[in-house]
Length: 120
Image (cartoon, rainbow, N blue to C red; front, side, top):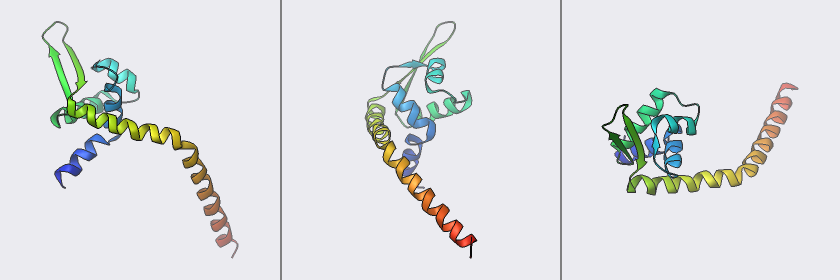
């Protein structure tokens, strides 16, 4: 796999997208980021953050206090990627009615086709 395709896969993964968009708001601690995203397991969030950190998109700031405090924020590179992804997310939100209409038309045509085949 080409290296740029691997980075694209990381950035556009289910949890990668949500992490990047959420971190656009502000830095988050792990637990509050998990709550903000919702329905992500601790393991998946950890893996996603590590992958994005390795790619240079997320900065992990571990403070030497008890209990340990770790904050996650976007790097300059991460902010650039997140802004582009947020644009796509906004587009999908705005165009959702068109997508739903297309799905309905497709499903109706598919059902009519299947019924016509079954009646033969």
